[in-house]
Image (cartoon, rainbow, N blue to C red; front, top):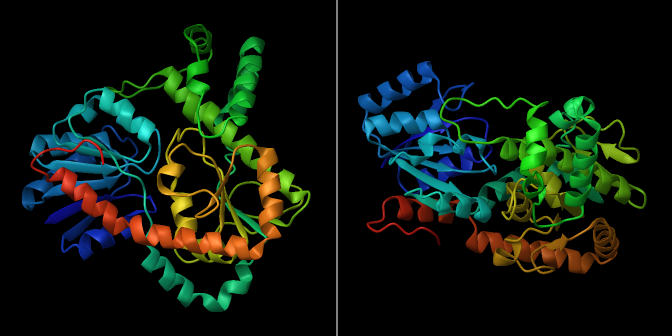
Length: 394
């Protein structure tokens, strides 16, 4: 098959494209910076010309772009997207009902939401990892392993540039207090999201008076969805991550790899950002404990960081997510925590039980090698897209 891939900044593309090619398909890449995911006249013209000049079996992208869907619909060609973020605000758009769409979502709760909207081709597909690529990187960087040895390591954003901090002072006193209560309540919950449910119609009516929601034509996202994810969800992630790192740093050596501002993280060693392809696997492999904190916007799904750590043979200590038991055994493949107290206790335990910790890391790596590779996911994706009878979920 001939596949046209719209490539943007998502990390997954190299592994996905390699999987397409390993299955014998031809891939052509299209690079273009989209300022508006729903409508871009210049990009739409470029894509239309490419689809008319050459026969492609489908267009593919990581995450969903309405402008691509509309062009594919007009050209009668399949559009396949696989989400790596959740929820995707770009999917709350009239174009998701285009007949050309084949939409794959990694968060099961988000999958059920869109399935309930009556979409013709929407599927659940977890994320994955390319262990062979990672093993090659680890072999090539073996001489640099001492540079990335850490007792406890966290790689990721601190979400310090979030809109809640910017607008908080503009909110009425009652809304400030209410949102603070919502944030604190969400921080005490692992593996679930209560934020949007707490944004009642009365609260949203008050919020509308001070917070303007900008929507493009055709969008059916609403204030509750946008504010719960891009405002309150990011603020929860910021506070959870800082609280956890500061708590652990009181007793242990904690290292953070990030491009975020860490000036107020006293006692946490700052190492700057790391390259996803060549440095990050080394950090995961060589650190005694790797931390993952899933942003609450991902309600049940397993984020890419989990797969990446396990694929590198790293020991993972992660917050609980509802889908984790579907794929991994707790304390055999990875270890999950449900609150800050348990995070601290588990950290103490596994730092002092090296043999057990290494066995879990090794078992987790074998699990993803056996059952959760990009090649396996892409095969399942193509089976669904080109099946005679559509299977809605596997």
